[in-house]
Image 1 (tube, rainbow, N blue to C red):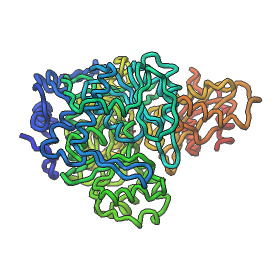
Image 2 (cartoon, protein in one colour):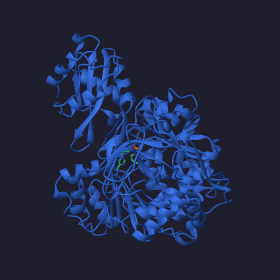
Image 3 (cartoon, protein in one colour):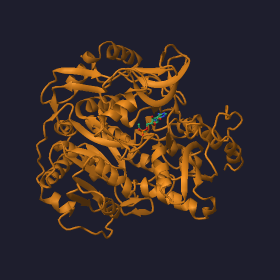
Length: 633
Ligand code: WT7
């Protein structure tokens, strides 16, 4: 028997060594004793990194929603499962108990079935942060439909390409969404997207803003009347361990976004176990993660991880600045939030507003603070620790990725503490490795390299939807027998890890993972533009911001409106989050003799670090570099 709770350094060390020495025995015990299974597995783990194939708990059968909801009904039926805090503070919050959640998920699942959705079908969810978002995710899982949540900040064209990539049969959306003082017309974005999607048979529309929308007869349905007519009992579909639970798109350094596929049993076990221990969740706690469910953080640590533990998980519809910059702290006070999990970019934005917006609020309920999404700088870490945690709350700087499904490297509050800018030690079962330029693992401490993982963990993504070859090439080809993360990291004298940032062409802007290629593709659509190169540069609030170096087909075409047009194209193809902060037009881009843009040089120019550009004489066009430096912004 292995205890689910980690209660101190000794537990961590014991469990960690068990998980590495005999992973199958370790995860088998955790899985068996803490979840409801309909049939046990025949093999805990089967894996082969050379073909990028991994399966956990093979042979078992289960339904994740029975583990998230049904099994809590007996003892926790009246406990709040989801605490919904609306955008407008005047509107009352809503407490959805486990009993309520059971009924609402079942009703929704029955509606999906009545519209022809079956096990294995893909359902796109494009909703604001309202309870129906979590409920529709669970309703899909209830009947074995694969949910593909698309963050509601993505544009119509980003939405349609995600719908088409995995052939969604249905989309669930709302008439609109409230975000601060704005109303976002989600339904009209969906209507535009669907002009390019042939596979969608039905559109379910949640009423939220009461905005006027157009409904296509026979295709579009208001959700509420369908829910009213549906039964509140829906038997959970029996799923195999490796049946896909969901697809979630993440941008890569090249090409189309990647539809990461997560499967059922391993994801369940790992998200539940990490949630419990990293956030030290206890029965009466009110846990709040400020992410959007459109990202992996929301999937794993707003919906699945907390509900698997029978927790109360707060869902916030709005933004940190509305009606003023005290909103987060006011919510913490009102709901007596105990664990608070957010992104460094939010911390920096709030710190900038000064303490006047923090001081009025009683934050004494807080026990643990978390951060995720990008490296946290020391200043932000200390501000969080001093002014929000008041030196009493351990900070968990959690490093992980869409692909990893769950937190990989993080402090565990009662076992070992964090230190600023360090994600610290691998979680139970995680075997990191740092690699050098020659593809060799770097052993020992006080070293730096590229971060890999050398052994499978239960919640790792299993493939890229429709393209296993790309999955293998992206993650398992850079280093033999290892999963490559795309991040650099150092390991200090105590074996603690500090993530130093991406080593590929992915830029993390305000915690959002943006590939440069899709942005460049969007810009290059402009008829006057010949070429573009996007790089990141440090930004006080966003962590990194985007700098575009752009050449025109004909320099005479430079106009005042061009910068606006470029950002409009980016908004159209990707979404406003990918807009450029700086745009520099240049007569040429530095290239290698084989014609490859030398981003390394552009990155240095954007970072105003031009003292050592390295040898530029081997460039095809060294003369352009000086002009670019001279005109840099
Ligand atoms: C990339 C993954 C996992 C949820 C949110 C982002 C960066 C994430 C940290 C952290 C330093 C971090 C990495 C990673 N990242 N957390 N605590 N410290 N960097 O998921 O969009 O898939 O992005 O975010 O560069 O590779 P994602």
